[in-house]
Each structure stands twice: as C-alpha cells, then as structure tokens.
Length: 607
Image (cartoon, rainbow, N blue to C red):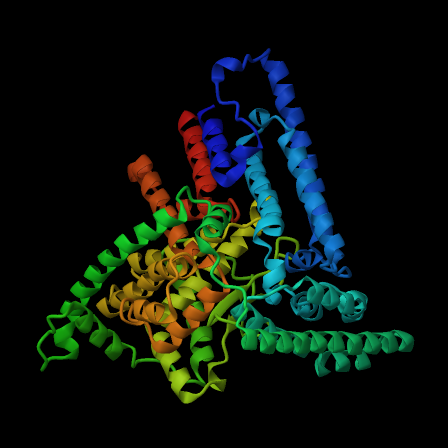
C-alpha cells in the first residue's frame, strides 16, 4: 500500500490529479476474501495489458513515422497528412484512451502496470496540451519534414531491397498532400524555427536524390513500378522544393514586417512543458535555483584544480588572483591539445573500443559487443545545432545499427573548426564519447530495448536518458578512467559546468528574456566555452524549450538515487548491479525507476 500511494502521488505530480480524486484512504478499502482479491487483481492486470496493446496499436496508426523510428516497419507504407482532420483524429485518440485508462481500478494493478499507466496518461495529457495550448504545429515549420523515415526505410535492411523500395514508393504517394497541409497549418512562425525548417528540408532532398534513383534502376522491380516510382520521386522533390520556396518567401515577408512569433514561450508555458517532459518532482524555477547553486560549487572545484596544475604549465608566471582568469588560462592551454579537422571523426572511432574495454575490465556494466555502433557524418536532414548525437534502433528492430552522428567539421572554415576543436579537445572528446556512446546513450538505449515493458521504452523520458549519459561521465572518472589525471578532471568540470549552464541558459532565454549578449557572457565567461560552441548553444536555446534542462535534472536525480540505494544496502551495495537494475526499466522517469528499484529491494529483504 505504501508503494501504491507513492505511485499515486507521482501520478498527481505528472499533472494527472485533475483527472479525478485519488483513493488514498486505506480505511475505505474493505478487502474481500484473499482468493477473490487475487482474482480481481488478475482480471484487472489482464484488462490493463489488453488496453495497453490496443493503445500501442492505435499509436502507430496515429504516428506511423514514429513507428518506423521504433523499428515497427508494418507502418512504413503510411504517411499521415498533418491537416485539420488528422489533428481531430489525434485529439479523439488521446481523449478516448485517457477515458479508457482512467476507468480501470488503479488500486488493483501491480506496480509495474501502474507505472506504465502513469507514463501513458502523462503522454495523452501532453498530446492534448500540445495541440490545444502549445500549438507548435502552427509556429514551428521544422516539425514538417518527411525525410528521416524514408532514409530509415532505404538504409535499414529489415527486408530485401526490392520490398523496401516498394515500401518507399507507396509511402511517397502522400508527400505532396503532406506539404500542402503543412503550408496551410503554418501561421506566424518564429524566426529560428523557420530558418531551421529551410535548412533541414534542403537537406531532405538528398534522401530523394541520385542514390535512390540508381537503386531503383538496378533493382528487380517491374518496369511499370519503376515508372511510377520515378513519377512519385519527381512529385516528392517538387513538393519539398515548393515548401522551401514557400518558407523563404514567408521569411522575407516577416523580416520586412518584423512580425515573427516570439521564440520565447514565457513562464506559464515553460512550467507546463517542463512538468510534462522532465518529471522529477521539481518545478523549472526550483531546478534553475539548484543549478545556480551548483554553478558556484563547480567553480570552486575548478579553481582548486587550476591552482594545483598552474606550476606545471606556467612555471614562470605567478598565479592570477582572479579565479576566472586562472581557470581560463589553464583551460585555454589544455584545449590546444586536440584533433585536426580531418582526424576528428577518426579519433571518435578509435576511442569507443577503449571505453568498452574499460567498462568491462572494471565490471561497471555488462555490454553486448554484438550490437553495432556506426560512427558516421551527420546526414544533412538531421543537421541543426548539435556536434554529436545518437540515432538508436527501436524495440521492434533491436539488432539494427545504432548511428553515432558527427558534425562534418572538415567542411567548416578554419576559424570555426579550430574553435570547435578546442572545445572538443583531447580531454573533452573523451567525455563526449562517454556521454554519447559507452556507457552513455548508446549503452542505455541498448538496455532500454531489452526492457519487458515496451511502454517504458517508447514513451522514454528525456531527463532519464540525458541524465544517465551525464551520470556516466562522472561515474567513469570516479572508477579510474583517465587515471585520475587532474587535467582530465579540470576539463570534466568544465564539461559538467556546461550541463549546469544549459539549465541556466534555457530558463534564462525562454522565461527571463536573456539576450544573446547575456547568453554569450554566461557561456564564454561563466562556463569557459569557446565562441563557436556558445554560438551553437544560443541557437539551440532559441529552437527548443525545456530539453536543455534534462541533462542537469536527470543527473541530480540519478545521483541522489544511487546515494539512497548505497545508504540502504551499505556493504552489500554493488555498483554493477545498481547500473543494470536501473537500466532494466527502460527509459522511464527517474522517480518511477526509484519506486520500482526500492520495491524490488524491499521484496528481497522480506525474502
């Protein structure tokens, strides 16, 4: 009952309390005979599992592009046209399933099912909020881009090439309708989102370029199929180009009138979005204040390390009395040790096996070496504002490639490339690879695909996902990665300061009206970032909302959970067991994972 009440509290926390009063008074529950209660629980569990499967099946009809990204290729031939009828269909789906799930007696559900329901209801509530309140479909043209699922169909060998080309062909039928609906939906867009939409849709044309033409020409498709394919390919290219022209004309018009939508969403919408997306038991403002406090503590640790390293790197110079100057000079000196434009990607490829070996040798996690990770240049249709990212397969196609996307630094000007290379130097590049690959995102997402709860995988929580990657960075260094080098630790704290600054920046820009000049000062002077990195992060803060807080929010939640479990188990605490148990629950919010882990521990103690 204690665990049940905690989960019900979590459900209220995740904006679900408005759905109806929670039954938390134990005196009102009069249990029948044990056998009858057992039967009632079994029946309710069955009803929940059946409804959950219906929900998932319906979800892939509403979001076939998402289904493809999760490896559910039965939906690959479908492309939903984002018009008014679709939005009405989407709202009906959300409201109908919300009613159906709320009709179940939650007090008869197991903790596993109850936590699944929490995620489902939060998702359905957020879906309704997105389309009735937030309405990004009106002001963010970058949400309209057909290319990624098409690229997955083309490049993922889930079926013979001929069958995939036929799927590609069928899916192309509605692309012109798709972009026509997009043009009708857009109303007074925000400037950064408009520019991103142009950039990424220009990149989308590559997916429908010469490569696919050659594949069709050399395929075993019938000649009439090839003819239809080429016709649809031409129509798709025309639709994308027309959309780009439409966006550019709109951009010119709004630049002249100055009537872009404000990309800052304000405190009310920000807090609402934060509550839906982050789910850690704090408000956005509370997290912002935590980050400001943490910023000061990290500055002090960096100052101590800079003091220690100063005689080694500046034996002839007195130590500056100004803390920031002292730290900055050490960081600038260490940042000169970096890869070149042409070796950056190769350095990433070389480091990943070293990380795998370290994790295995130090017994931190079990790793599946058979799960492929491919380092590649970020495809044009995915480029925007990140230096590196992971594209992982979904739970329906667990053995497909995971891609480590790396920005093409070699194509940049020497000035911009050198700035980024100093930011991602010999030390921080190792932290980046821990974060993105092993044992960060790549490893976590492999584990998520093994979770027995598909709900906890497909409805993944960004704070858990990003928080794990940030947690992994410090965990690896604490385990001895880098031999406790003070240089690596100094640069780690610089990196960790970036995590903290992400929260300060995002909240500052979206809620407090932080200007670009103020943001650059925060990042360059306050967080010791290079100009190119800071410019990219400013751009990112104008394009997204809340997501940048997920790193710090998830990290502090996971760190607190580990300390709680360590205290509870004492000498019986095993780090590898903690990691594998934590990751076994998919990508659920950390408070939910906490309840599941503590319930398991309580049951183990009772046995």
